[in-house]
Image 1 (cartoon, rainbow, N blue to C red):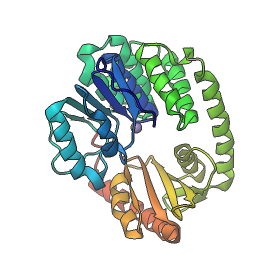
Image 2 (cartoon, rainbow, N blue to C red; image 1 turned 60 degrees about the horizontal axis):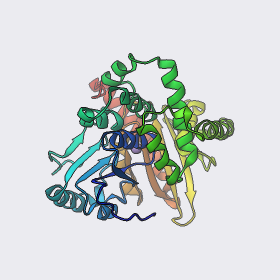
Image 3 (cartoon, rainbow, N blue to C red; image 1 turned 45 degrees about the vertical axis):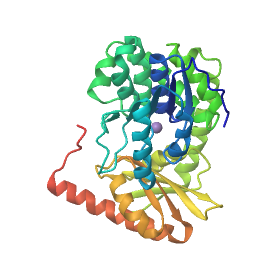
Length: 337
Ligand SMILES: [Mn+2]
């Protein structure tokens, strides 16, 4: 991690996620508070990174899910910060059931963090910055909210998709290049087009090239259970692998498992077009196989020890089937629509 001299002119610190929704959220926050310092973090490292917030007048956190295991400690720390600084925590991941009714928390699971960040900070933002919120929403598959659909009407949708697509592919290609991502936030915060950034189109093309080779490998290697189609070690982007596994395995839930030697476990990504809540099912099933798991209803992850992987996958498969039948009987519809 790069360290910075604390500059008294900089009053705002922004913590955000390194994916496309996080980068767009960060850019929107930076556009509202140009004299700010941006740091990338993740749910598991937020608590530790918050040490950096000392001395800032304003602390903005975007697109960081609340880590269940440390949520109590995190809540105490955030309350402490909110006594000293102006705290704004914007996120769209599910929050713990107890204790998080705080005035500084802006949470809505039915929108992207980019949409929420624009809404929370809108009084300081140019209307045109909505375009960045749309890119972030597309990056998080959350461009079907009523607000984003309405915002899209002010632009030529085809141009939006071109810019968003190039931006998202480039971000995926850049992986852990946080210096690049920080520069990208500066670029977007100034309301410049993604395609006008010198690296974006080249990175996006490289991402698409890797993705295409991955897709063709998955078409050959995918295996299917009753409800889950899966690939093991597809050697490529995990979430994209899960999407193509579902498509070529002809199942509603796609799964991509990557072997992690250091943990002797599989890191697993899921993408679902089933109405079931994968987050809920994984939080229940994964611990029973000595693993952990969760995320969003339609996009989630898990880590499961190698020795339990097959049994875990089989139980998950039958649980998804049971849950689908139950939903069908009760005729329950998605709470976001
Ligand atoms: Mn994110």
